[in-house]
Image (tube, rainbow, N blue to C red; front, side, top):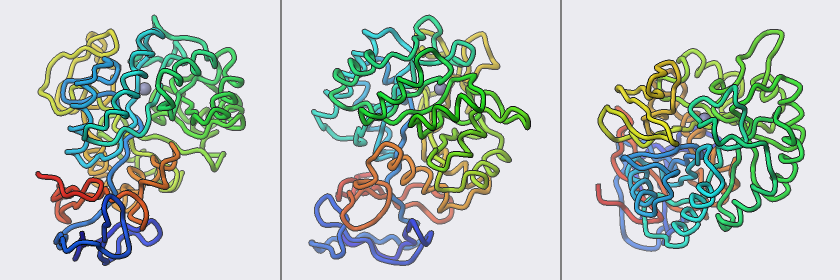
Length: 377
Ligand SMILES: [Zn+2]
């Protein structure tokens, strides 16, 4: 297929006018068949990569339901999110094991929808004081043996684990996880600057939803945010649904960290793509009004978002983030953070031919090409 006439995302140059060619499921320098796709009036961007979302269309990854995970994958693909690394909640080990097994079985089945490229264990190795919407009953001290058991159940699917580095044994846990090829993210934490810096020195290279679930950046106590800034290898997740982070802070974060180090995430809940109402969430109940999802009875505790990653990308642009920076933060950066940037994250020859045509007027989806095939809209 030859995609012509579009403004094409380029990691170095922003957007350039060029054709994009596919050969089978991969991007190529020339097209092997006669198929053409007119992208005039469109931006052509890589399929998005969400490394932190819990659910959508009434389903939650933590339910460990094969049908539910398939519905999630189908919905995410329809939103232009072609790669998913869903996140589990803080739950007992047997439930986490079921979640891991379900992810491995889903990946093996390969029955369509967004491609499952990993899973993110957001819990249970978190701080009670910053558990946010996580269920405190099931928090657990960092435990490398448990992580290995879960990774075994997941058949290697675990790509990311969040940990509060002030918890007992956290530094050894970080070193062991990194040695096993699992990226470690600092989050849901009360860590001060020194503790967070030690976690990053031990190999953590990611911060979970920066600002949310951690102490703020105080001028004498800069905490995780300051420590993340000071270590150039660290990438930071940002929930850009228009609710979790003020627009000024979104702009400031892109300026402070640079577009190379920001990862847009949706942190989306099962209510995403659903009407307002009450929904179960990790053994608790949440209440959804419009764009806002909170723990039932605790209207000040945000439970996550109800916006897909594509919606977050549009929101970042509406907040003043340059489009090329927002696209990079929702594709290449998350792909790199979980080690799949050889296959995903940009439109370079040899990578998978999963790309999205966005209307240049309103960034709505005009076409989705997934693994070289144009999807029916
Ligand atoms: Zn969280």
